[in-house]
Length: 283
Figure 1: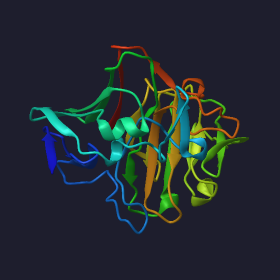
Figure 2 (figure 1 turned 135 degrees about the vertical axis):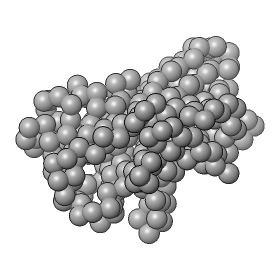
Figure 3 (figure 1 turned 30 degrees about the vertical axis):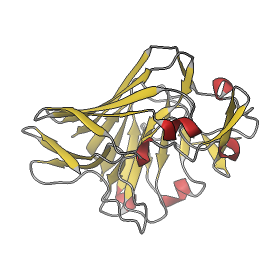
């Protein structure tokens, strides 16, 4: 089942399974979201919750109990309920259940709110701690943008001039090894060689947005002011690029296994609510 929202400029389609954005088109029928061809990657824009990335040994411990969580958590594999809809907005929700408590012992509600405003799609996250104890979590976006033409025709531009040091993954965990991107006029030409070691992971950035350009012409911009971290990723020879605003990232080999001590983790007290949002601007 899907829900479609639209305004005079854009139309967005969201799948209830995973509350996943599967299409974002202009009124000229130009598609900006990756089609999800499983030959490369069968997703479009999954939600990462209650972890981002991979846990060491895919496990953590809490109150002397061990729990197992797969990469990026379970929200992307759950059926969301549509709890509110207008012509240009839709709100989806999941809540903790007996099944989620087996792998993540915290009571929560997660809401995703999609809203179209002119040439922007806003995607807001709302995490509610419905339990009586402190709740550690991570949350992130993973939208894949369609790049249908020659990959080398595209570039990315960061909002600010800054040193772009990123962390390398080793066995899906964050290593202590870093590299620095060569930047010219805040721009980086896209090549598949950039991603030979998997995603580019920025723990912190000064920039609040990133723009995709085709033949030096800006085509879309992702605004992520609320988010401290960012991942950029594609697969070899795949015609898409993921721009991923995150709260949190994979474990390191030194991680203790205690989620409350995890680098980049968010801590939500009982009955508190976490809010964040990012947006996709079509240029």
